[in-house]
Image 1 (tube, protein in one colour):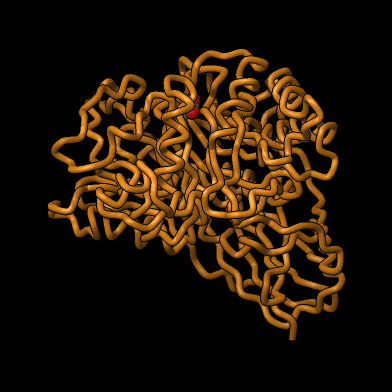
Image 2 (cartoon, rainbow, N blue to C red):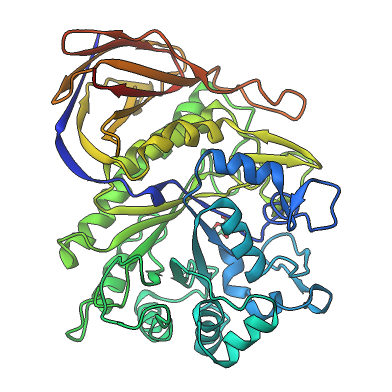
Length: 510
Ligand code: AHR
């Protein structure tokens, strides 16, 4: 019997809803075909956005959407994507497949998508090949409500009212595709560029960190375990008697992908053995170490944990599906991906004192997508259902919890058999999510609740063989189901979690 302890009276911090964020880049069939098909498409759409995709995404309550990249962001010139579509410039998408980008999806279309999704906006600016002026004018174009050249241009293009930009990234992967900068150089560039990300929406520009009234600015953080980058950027941002959080930045990004093999041979999304399954999970669990590593450095400069660690690219990255464009990063999604997502989301909850936002890469048709499309067909992936099961944690309060685990998997590189997190939501219900990493073993779990009397439980589960997936022929092979085998005990709950599964329990007081 596995013992699991939850103390609902020991309230920790809020689990920001933005932890459940998504990323959509001008890459392969993510934006074009996957989300945007244009007003004249036969595929049912509202102002060009696929209705089926938007409806599915609304169900999982997408809280925030990052756009337009990724590597694409540092080659994106926003003025190419406004005005009459026929006159918009065509360009080559040099990073992703060398295809023609016709700019038919630009700022107005992104804002319309965010409106339809009911989500916050997170725009990534161009530092690599752009200018301070270009970035500053984009902010003016999007957010200034008075009379100015950019506000007038926006009105001329059909949108007199300003939009709200919730988050703004100053450069993407500036250590790599975003300009190959060294950390000190980037941090100084960051200081300069962010100065002109003006807070037009508020008259009182008194700096305050993580203020939702303001545009929250995100600095480019490290790749994986590059602690030198984190240290140097923070040191430079906190220099000159000007603490970074006095309006300079609200967060530092972190990118880490779960790649089962090497970058050259990443491995197949669907054809893998048990050993590779556990290697993949072990690499996913590495996120825990990375968060601790970078948070440790952040603690030195910001012990009050005001700055967010923004994991705005995470997920699995495999070889592309055979026969597809290698630059499109199209991959299938199995129960293995669902377990990877379950591991990550529990970790993000557990570290939500520092992790303030994350974005899975990417939302549709690219990498660990929650949705796949083919023409007018749509498939919800196993990962989609994990976001569905976890959405109950959005803006809930993390509570203290501990589960007894045993090491399983590959010799010399084990993973814990179980991962979990628990929160109390705004209606006072206890929300619990548990992931069973084992490919073949179910575990009986005795949950001991302190500070909470269980009166009623609703539970739902996603489970299946590690290779189980949804296809366009069989779109519902894997989907969430009700889970009724939960017994209330004197001090909590008793249930058995099946192998390879993600379980969500909502516990209500009597
Ligand atoms: O998500 C795909 C790419 O991965 C992004 O464009 C880039 O930021 C990262 O290297």
